[in-house]
Image 1 (cartoon, rainbow, N blue to C red):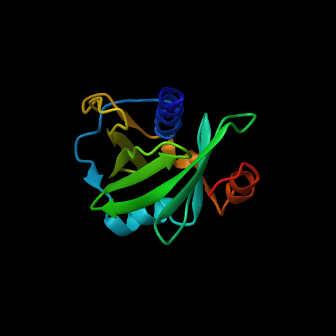
Image 2: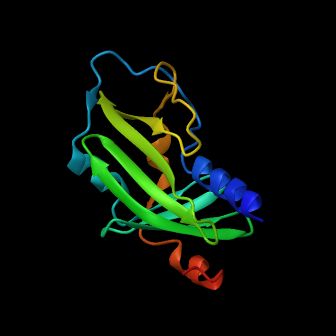
Image 3: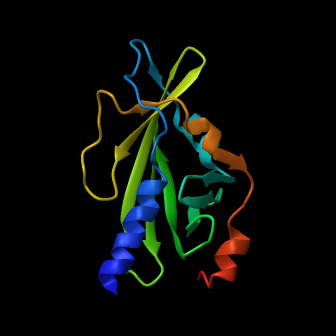
Length: 154
């Protein structure tokens, strides 16, 4: 059972950081400020391919994995340091904490993100792993709490 929970949690956290289109970071790109990164997440729901995560302004997270049918919940915290946001989540019933981080830069009108820390310890692609599609994933408000509570989230 623990292996299954760990596998599900890995899928959950990995799904929150998968990017649609990856590329190189353009020359001259500048890191976003901590306040700009905080504004990307605070009070918003990350609507990802396999999960949804609500980033409460207080620094907590709630998530539901599984689409179209929810399969499990997870929760934790998120913090911003410089141009990088990290979240630390646990799946219900799994004692392990999983870390995922994303860093952000601006080049012209585009915001680039890099999945900078992977929950499974794999190395980020610091050459071709930058994406500009991430901003579409963040929706205003809490789109998670009702599903989270219905699934028995703590």
